[in-house]
Amino acid sequence: MYQIISMCERHVPYIAALEAQVFSAPWDEASIQGELENSLALWLIAEDEGGEGKEKPVLGYVGSQSCFEDADILSVCVAPEARCRGIAEALMLELERRLRPKGVEKITLEVRASNVPAIALYSKIGYAKVGTRRNYYEKPREDALILQKSLLSEP
Image 1 (cartoon, rainbow, N blue to C red):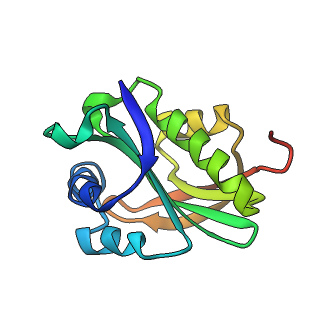
Image 2: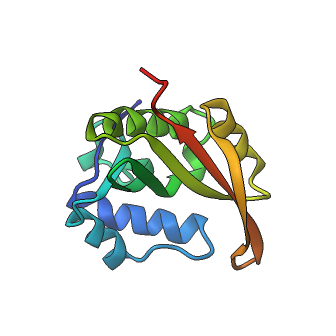
């Protein structure tokens, strides 16, 4: 089981380790730490229940920044050993729930064009393609699909 909570200082090294494990261009620990002081940022963690005493308390996370009515998702990740448990979907939906009262009307994200499982998840929860960024990703070089969701018609 897991719980979704706001990121705090103790999560930073676990997020940095997951970034390095999963992504070819990971956020470093200092950049993640900086998000704790960023008033525009909201990062949520799927924490293994009883997380502080666990060796790997962070099962997944989503990080965002918002400005006025727009939010951008900066990173979404679920640990490989914790996938297929609905964690990414739960994180995304909780992020939306917490952003609505802040006046956010739409959320945008980029995803590798080849990341079929992520694209399927985003589509399932209401994101639609609004564009493409050519050669956005490196290692390997690849296009990013720009996906967006309106929060105006959602409860």
